[in-house]
Image (cartoon, rainbow, N blue to C red; front, side):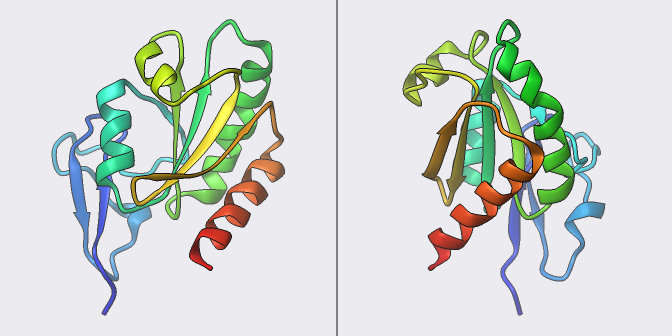
Length: 149
């Protein structure tokens, strides 16, 4: 019997239990009733970010970006396409560094776009610069596999 997963809703930040054997792609939030995974990375606030990283049992890939950043806007469709490939094994979220400056400072963001991969509350990898969908997917899977080894 597998372990239950804790999935943090990217819309309302409620922590949801997903029992073993249940299909995460069909799961809905117990609080807001929205799908737990939509294949669309939500732009979240600081409180939701902290819950995603600290409470969820699913690895989290965060794209730190800003609306004025050309490379960030260029990478946005690739990050969205990567969400459709990686979810529900990985939660993909976006963090606007202009709106959430304290979190960006805490993360030590020096350039954007920056992607950071978290697992079990800890950062396991980061990269800066715009990537294609296949690069995002490969980078994420490679680092998750290394973290398991």
